[in-house]
Image (tube, rainbow, N blue to C red; front, side, top):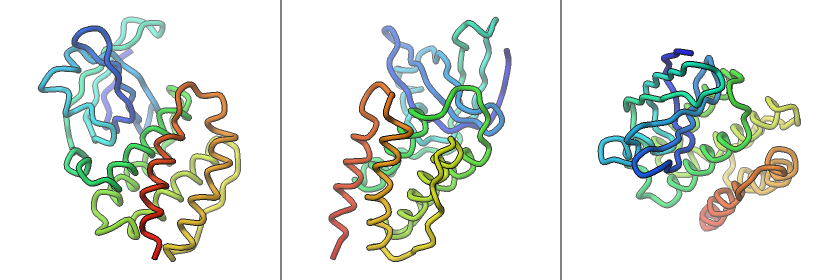
Length: 199
């Protein structure tokens, strides 16, 4: 198997002494995981930040083998990780994506929406400018995976905060019920930070 594609890093974890296992979302191939040699080194650690846009090259001798993954940074989300709200939002949407999408199933609309949501988080002047994108992204994942999820048309911050709070139950019940780890912890942290925006 050989493929090259633009991708969004959605998860990375250490493997062995120097390597990492990264999961990236591509438009045409869906979510793919690969072994990144030297992923914990100085050069590649900043590339493996969840939310980063990368050029990915995946290669494997067989479908049963974990592929080797080479990544080149295209756009970094690193500068926004020092800001509590954007950092929490980036962590949540990437964690959610990595936790719920099946591997190697293409979801082009999810790829486009995640890319747009990350752009909104990083370039809107405040959470008022990107919260709707996060709520829409969650609703899209629910729909794409067969659990409904309407598209909100509200722009008012109070209404969006209420929708964000209400959407927690279907996400936890339908998408994250059988998942290992506590993906919802990222959302709880984001919710606590968003609550501080209330007048």
